[in-house]
Image 1 (cartoon, rainbow, N blue to C red):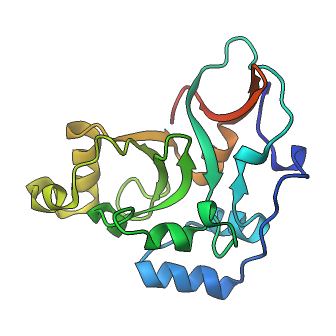
Image 2: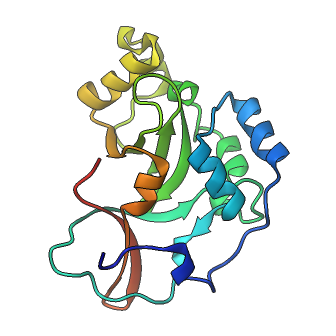
Image 3: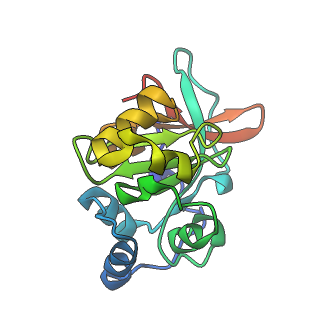
Amino acid sequence: MANEFRFEDHPGVMKFKAVADEAISGLAAQYGFEFSDEYRTFLKAHNGFNFDRLNKAVPLAPGIETFDGISYLFGIDTGFEYNDLRTYLALPGVWDNPFHAFAYPVAEGAGGDPIIQIFKGKAKGKIYFVDHETVPDAEELEQDAEASSPDQALSFLIDVQGCFIEVAKSFSGFINKLVVYDDDGVINVSIRRPLA
């Protein structure tokens, strides 16, 4: 496919130190996450990725429509503050919303919007873009009667708030939707439409 992003096409991009199984399991236990097998495999193979460091691409092929840009894929203990999941989760006000009980961030959009993977409920494994400008504050979400289970909370965040937008059925599906392209000398990585 034209403009398809593949890790092997960008061997010169910043590499991150390997992550041990113990660090992956420890972070998951600390926050109560259940990382998917695909995300764990990605962590072991790449432990994050910095799309801001790409230096080659071709213009976007005709007919390809994009949704939103991606800056980073999160790794664990990467040594690079911007894509280090441990550092990101520890920032005050960043990941204190009640949806941390059923989702974890896997990437960050160009505008600072998290890309998350669901780990509980009927949507387990799916990837969502979170519009941080329309996410209800933690108190509002906790008080809402709809937020009593992961499925009800997700329904509220999708249907009522409109802040969760499904982009892929799985982590590998998300990676397969990424396109890299040159836009007047600026290299971008975006999520290809159609979503999910």
